[in-house]
Length: 520
Image (cartoon, rainbow, N blue to C red; front, top):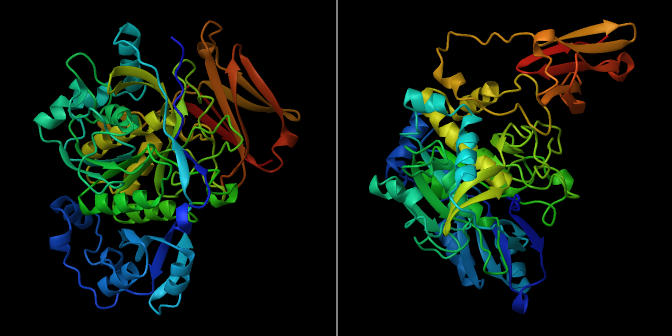
């Protein structure tokens, strides 16, 4: 079967809308004369999360916008479309003349135009539920040592996951999700593009994504978090020519209010909206919103993107945000980065991706089952993993959990900008925490004259098996100067001239063992 490529969500800049009506953010100066009752506003799960994380129930970002300000703006524009408490703003549709009038109001801090895009969500071909499909489904969970969660009884129970996507057609009728309805595990739904509760239509990308978190039948399991609860949000439009990040912003506030512990976002905004230098985790509103969600105790899991073999190449936003667990893509056939998975680092030099998992996955779709490509599917596989890990270690905060997931991964403490720390492993969370990892040396790292020689230890030389050795050169701040993955066939893996280090650090990883050489 030929692999089917699914593009990471991307957007194409288009021209001015009809009658010069365009979309804008209108930011207010203050929240004067507003009142807030957290026990009336938040779901009980949101209250619980804040208390457990030591977060104030009276954070000013949660206070409502001033109704007088909002109503005054509404009277002077074509329409107010969304409201953001976190950013003290409203999005509007307005003409240029109307915007100039808004700028004169004393309570308007500033106005920002919202770029608009045409979206291409995905394209896939159907496949039968055959042995190849079943094997891939098992492999995508086994690669994360998922059986360790299952054997220990961890399935994400008690964790609430919000899924942002382009639609969830047939989720309410598909056998892979039937148990979610039987057990009342889908708690709320909202279509932010239509302002109603019906999300079971539109683009089937969300159906496939959800299946990689929690899809299962009596025959097969597609995701690890089959015991979790869900909030389903439609935030993307592909049947209409426009889509805005404003829906993502509205959805993240909704998810917080309704008690989400984890957000999965297999979405990204890149080249036709931003420049490379904007991927710094603070420029885009969605990155800032993701970081704010993290401050409120939510773990945000986001796909890296599918631009690794395009001109853009690098991480999209909000995966660039510092507090987001960003997920790269692994090729099941090789065990290393799949060609289209986007690269790190961020524009300001931070590590991305954080971890990686399969970006070629077995998924449920409205018409049955498919094999699909994209970091869109690596992200939900990791989100399901995170739910089980959090159930296992419920005392952790969201940021502590994020660091522990990194530590659990196959390459840790090695990292690079293609794989992050590697593939997270469930047994890290299920084994006795007093049992420390004792990696067995698999190679030697020696300085011979003006070269560093890496030799594989005899017991680990296997010319009949594809084996990969990873190495990077990092500066004192941990930023990588270079990194490579090489295929190992013989005892002498490679040599590197000492001069290439240039006062930096060499780290090498092979089959679970990492060693480093410091500055010479």
